[in-house]
Image (cartoon, rainbow, N blue to C red; front, side, top):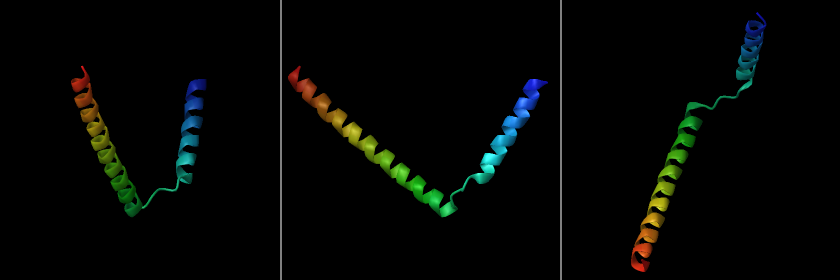
Amino acid sequence: MEIIKDLIHFFGGVREEFSRVVWPTKVELLGTTAIVLILVIFFAVYVGAVDFILKALAAKIF
């Protein structure tokens, strides 16, 4: 029974913390999501280009 009381207390605390969260607006959420997607694409292209260049250099050396 102690575990059940602890779980009830834990989830009560979780519920209380969620009520304190300041949730972003839809516009803020879409804006930050767009920024994250743009950065992910940029870095994927960058890492791919660096990989391609280093692979070509390694092929010429070896």
